[in-house]
Length: 210
Ligand code: G3P
Image (cartoon, helix red, strand yellow):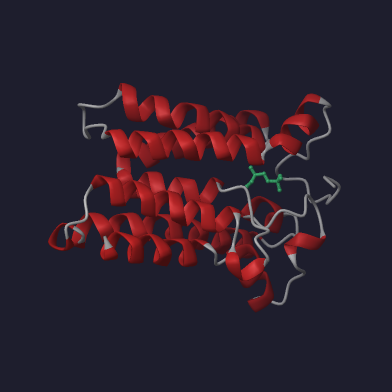
């Protein structure tokens, strides 16, 4: 079981690259952990006022979830790696983002990385989930609410649409469900702010979501 272990450790290390922090540093912006919600994620980087930094953060945080999954899918078979390893590397990259070894284990909420993992599992699954996020975000203007609703729908899409363009595999189903539950758990403060009417809306620059 050396190859699965190596793959999972590598995925966790890639996931640990907190791109909100890295991109902000490279672009000479303030550390996203010091303003707004304090969350190292694309949504909070957007509150710096730099759409470019937010977009790059979103892209790279998604790529780090997508890459380990597709690498195992494309090249794993020769090494004896199957669906269980696909599921575990996706989860490992996601957990790296939440608990990054390079940043004192203080990471983000996992929205972009989970989306990357879903895209790696199935392009259609990722697309459906991203569209769900987008629709809620456009109508309600809350990034967190969009993520919460999308993470309820993602496992449903995966299981209920199985047999269409993908077949739900038990280990991958488990990973998708665990990711969704952890993602919701990481948004517990957002849930409180949403219920109190204090969540900051997308498109407002005010960094007051403390
Ligand atoms: O990307 C995480 C998002 O759902 C919420 O972020 O900064 O508003 O807590 P934030």
